[in-house]
Structures are given as C-alpha cells and as structure tokens.
Length: 290
Image (cartoon, rainbow, N blue to C red; front, side, top):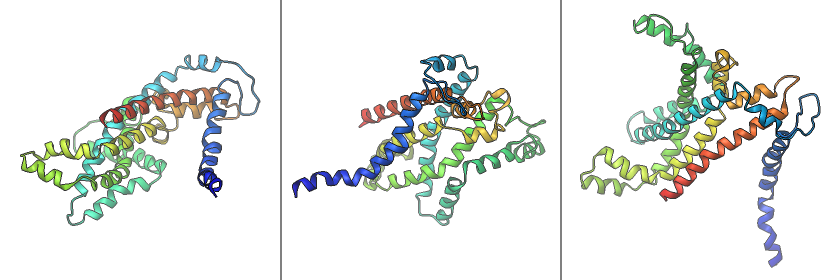
C-alpha cells in the first residue's frame, strides 16, 4: 500500500513532464546542437564548431536587432507594469457603466496581433487617419513618417503593444487589488495620507508580487516581439531593415529554400540568454523586496 502511494504523485505529473520534455526541453536541446552545425533547409549539416557564433557578430543587422529589442523591452516593461495598475484602480470602482468600460479595455486582448497591427498600419500610414486629422487641424503640414522613420516605427510598435496589453494585465491587477485590505487604506487616510501616498505605501506593496509577475511576462513577450514590427514595417523591418527585431532576424535567416537553420539556431540561443538575464534581475529584485 505504501509503495503504491510512492509513485502515485509521479503518475499524476507524468503527462505534464512528458509535454515539457517533448515540446520544450527537446526543441531547446536540438536548437543548441544545431547552432554548432551548418545545416540548411534542404541539406544536412556538419559540425562547424563556433563558426555560426563568429558569423553572428559580423551580421550588420544584429546590432540593430539587439538595440531595437532592448529598447522595446525597456519601454514596454515600465509602461505595461504601471498603466494597467492605474487602469485597474479606475475600473475597480462601482460606478455606472463600469462593466462596459472593462469590456472595452479588454477587447484588444482577444484580437489577433496581426489584425491589430494591420489596423494600426492603416491608422498611421502617410494617408492614414492620424496624419489626415492632424493635417486638417493644422498641427502638421506634411505627414509624419510613422511607418518609415526608424524610431517612429519602433515607438509606434511600442504604442500598439501597450494598447493591446492594457486589458490583459488590468485583469491580473483587478484580482490582486481584491486582496489589498481596505482597513489599511482607511488607517492611512486617518493618519493623513493622501491618494498618492496611499497608492505608494499601501496599494503598491499589496500588489508587489503581481507587479513582479507582470514585469516578467512583459519582458519575455517584449524580447519575442515579431508581429507588430513585421506588419507595421511591411515585412522588412522598416527601410533598410533598421527596425528588425531578434525574432525577425531569426525568421529571415531560417526562411526560404536555402534557410540557414544552423545560423538561426545560434541566434535563438543568443535570444535565450538575453531573455534569461532580465528575468533573473527581476526575480532577484522581487526576492530582495520580500
């Protein structure tokens, strides 16, 4: 009876472990092995040591891809960590039509990233709605190059990502705010703390765990940015490919009949280590605060 109990937990977690091994661990190990070969789409490869990693640093687009990805993450993480919290505080109140506003804010989450990017492409085009309204209002004399200027394209993709992610992270914060005790706010108010002071001294510490989780999710998603820049940049990463992201660079290296799968695998390994670094920093910060 006792021996039967000993392997029961392993039987329960076996499907999850099998899924993890087949769809996560094995592809990661296979990618690491391929990064040391010169395998192509239609031809087998041979072991070439660190040549892919050496070629990687000679790639003229790699520096732009790393810079764009890091800027994208550095801007998205703080914006999508704090703005959904403020939005959750607003819609948490029991006011008329608040359910309608919650639905409106969450609606972009259920839309496809590609569809949303195509809508924003139409809005930000030289002949799009934004430039048209700004010119009619007399704010600008010529169309702003939202989709052709390097930094305007990057920050347009950031704005799209923030707009699309607000509703999802707002729901996470709404759940966390329900665990913040009202008595703490009342006690702080009795001591003379204003709205801003109560926000930093009561609300933020109460949802700090959720904030750390949200920041980690945003950091991972930001490092994998693809559809936003791919669609807004017309599948090229902007003029000259200056707005290409790391995932776009991997896609370009691996696509086509002569796709360099070994080189794309080396880029994937680099992306993995660049993603793990910020996650470790966020986890360490969260542990120190605890």
